[in-house]
Length: 485
Image (cartoon, rainbow, N blue to C red):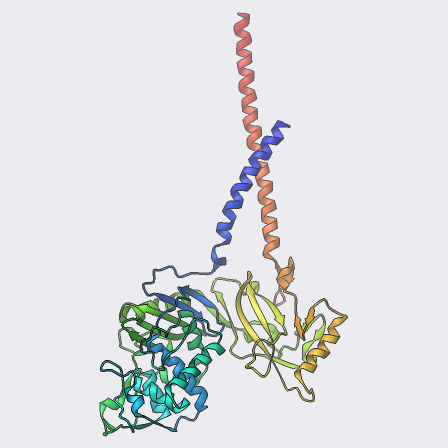
């Protein structure tokens, strides 16, 4: 009995040590590479623009001053308003060329009464960051600068951003004007949905129409230059693959940069706020881009998920084929983001027919993709070609009725959610391959380790006890000999 107690005590000691060690390995970011070089800027993030997966964050929710990064939102409001008509003329009022304009402000030198096309104004807004142009565009769209600012903050709310507030369209300092690295990444991500934003912000220079102060069309003052040096070859900070972005700087904000780059079908956004110099904001951005392009991959869901090869003709819930009810497809730009060394077959998915995209009239649900319970991407399901179906909700109701007697899938308020396959110990992934869950693997490992511990403990105990018995017998033998003598 004493031997058994000792074996159990040793075993419990090993188990206790093991239980404290395992979480250290389990918390190793699940194999996700992490940039651990020190960042001197006040905040920074890196995000996959296609999957919205945040790959790096440092003080991502710290409220800081945006400086001229605010002009990205100004451009977005203009894009939304003009709807592709960039030839209309913008009038420069006295207020536009004087409000918040001081000797050190960046301007194109416009005078009251000058007129430029919206296209000219957008290039002048985003390349050299002209503040008089920001004011003129605001008045053109909303009638006044104050009313335009209301539109900016309304857009912030629509994008679901919680830590951004604008006070003016230029980004010139105001204590009540702030943003975060995370929010600015989402704002840039939205701006990138407009092809014209790429076209403008990736340009090295642009010559706008002459203004009163510089009447000669060939006057160099009518040419605006891009201040985003990672776009400009030969600048010393050029980054091969850079596609868009915007700089910002004030004394209190420091040096800011929101930029995008594309390599190997991966589209990254990097935001750096509060750098202490021009050099630091560009170099830290380039290093962050390099690390994440080297260690991550972005996969198109339409190519990755084999179910989309035939317009999702084989997606079904408990044998109810969805294609019989709708012509369903996945939104074109949906991606998942994974570490390069991760086996893609380990990715699992979950289908939900809850509408969470109110701005997409074709949205009928979504598929979320996970790797070890970490969200790696999401695809909005779109239903088209409804033909004689009167309402999309008719489809939900009909599909719900078909499922009521065939499945344990939850149906609430026209919402159908497929159970997550990761809850099973053994399941098939999106590619049809058999996968053993991490839970089952962990159980097997614990059992094996437990058995090994018991075996080792027993061996050590028996060995020690055996040696002890031998020593006792020798001692008794010698004692008897001495007593006899």
